[in-house]
Length: 112
Image (cartoon, rainbow, N blue to C red; front, side):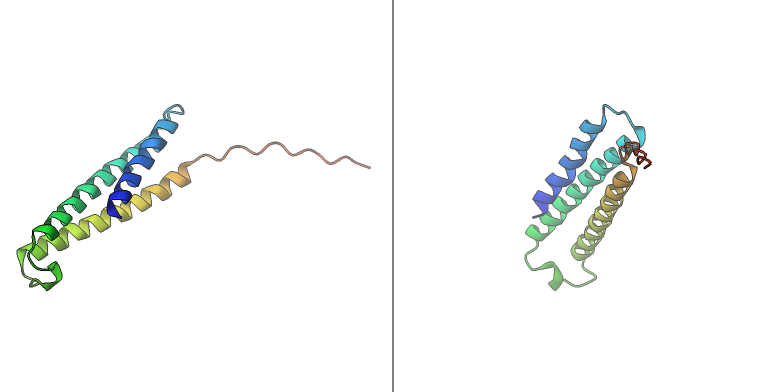
């Protein structure tokens, strides 16, 4: 599931950057670029987490809380979670920054 999430987290902002490039709105491009950077960092952290799980002979939860492997796993898991929250915040920011198209002028109602 995480692999699919990483593809979505990387490809969605990239597609939006391509769509927004013509408008050249700097704020939106910066937000989308930041989203791509955060998604890349999260994918890297999650890859490291997966490697730690695969290399451990016993489940991580069975290790002592003082074990360096468990501590590194916990740190990476926390970083990954914070990056995910930051991505959600950036997605909300991108939604707020989207300009709504102007409403057409209303027609005056005919007077009887």
